[in-house]
Image (cartoon, rainbow, N blue to C red; front, side, top):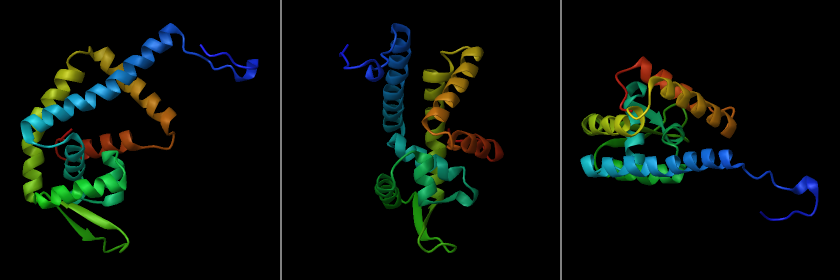
Length: 178
């Protein structure tokens, strides 16, 4: 451990137990998206980020969202989302239109072909989520995982309503595309 000049600037190093917990969370946060991306690419030709964007549109009223809202939901930067939406648009799965309420904003709408794509991809994706995340845990561990996830999200951004918004949205409409 590096030495510090004075007591106040000494880092609070992780204990062995804290380090094991951190490394487990870090490994899952890196490997789970990669595993889900591999499954989606193999089974449907979609990348995980593309799937998240399509799924977020599939759950929206009128299958339409503002680009900025979609970027938040897909957990990507506006520039990354713009590149992905361009690819999805070329495939015929989405279309962009100016927002009639705010001309500075752009709306993205899931087309019927996009809907068919996400509906076709969803069962295998959900099966993989079930295999990797749901089935290895007991019911009590799943409840604890939700509690832990919510606490970590609150520490990352106390004002973030991402999880609550997605859960409420998914429960209000058709079965979620996950």
